[in-house]
Image (cartoon, rainbow, N blue to C red; front, side, top):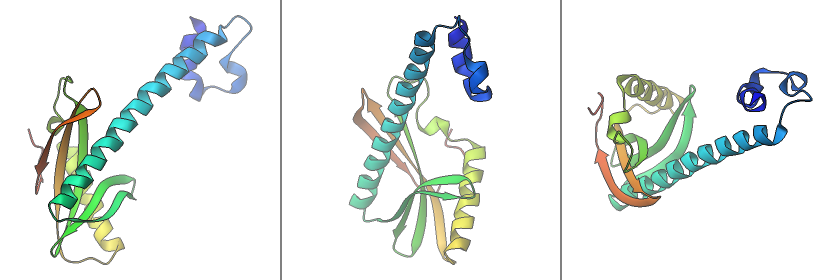
Length: 159
């Protein structure tokens, strides 16, 4: 059991402190492997959701300018353009059986961060036109696409 506890805190410990002779290295490796699988599944569903979002936007006539753009430590999932307007899109992907919908995960803190990132992006690229913040909520069931909602001009939390 000591190996499991130490594996979870290992990033804060030196290599020498991580294991001693009595620790079960197999158990420690198992915890790390399980954590890695969980994280990679989340990343995969997020990437899948972003690809669905790009497809939806392109079908609606949007031009994709950038994906996963980082501005001042805030990631903008999609930067798109339609007519004379730049659209900064947050994509939220959730499995259908989760307790909260993708829309419910947008907080006022997140919309503030998105607005700040949009302004910084505009300054970085000398853009002075109109822009808006959108949300695309993707729902999956066992990794398969079930539903998508496109919310335009979000400036406050959806719920």
